[in-house]
Image 1 (tube, rainbow, N blue to C red):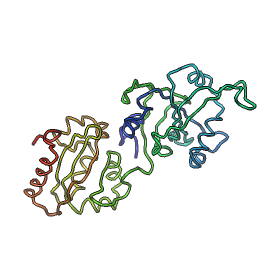
Image 2: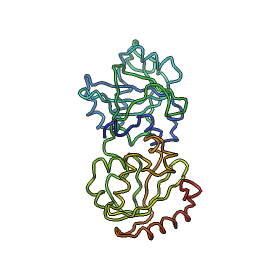
Image 3: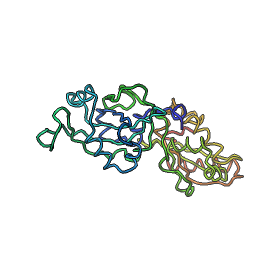
Image 4: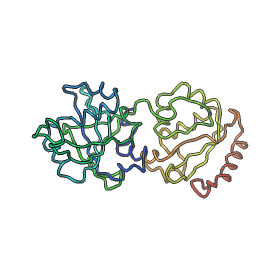
Length: 297
């Protein structure tokens, strides 16, 4: 997916993927762009995290300003490494490490006295994004600091998300009962018009729930059209709120939709009448008390 369709920064994605992450709460993160020189970094990235960690542990940093940024600035607690694509100039997320401190030269055999050695520890908070998330990193600066004071929507140097390879969660349809889609999944399915998903979602109508993941606030909706679930959910994929008046109050811009997930509560026949469909919708509104949340009718 292209960045103009995702409309979300990498920093915002991190807060969606792991809102309770100690990295996000710290906000004291250094972004480091590795550029292929004497090592085939894309190949190294696929060879395992341990090898990637060994590389960055022994990496000869040639940028004095960046070294001073890490050594002298106590705000730097975590580093996120990216690998630059020399053709597209885009950068692929590779690894997150915690900076435990600077290692004394006396503790390293044959240490180069002219370089600084850092003690890094692997962080697993964003493991599912490693090697998959690609950002647009404009400019030549090999390191940039992101300090957001705990607010992922703020901070310097926001990085636009370009794509995520092999999206997580629902990459293939399983059963209607198991459908739980975040907004990235939803966008991906409708942008690519995934054949299997389209066939299944066009085959039936349904009562569905849209849930704000952090609060549990729920919106109940229903479909009763000739194009089934597909015909209604495509609107959500485009705008996030799908035109629903109440959802518009919570999804004022497309980025807000990433706080929500879509799930199917009950399937209904393709030819279901609007009377029957609305009756089922109202039943779930009563069961889940959604009128006290995001439904107002």
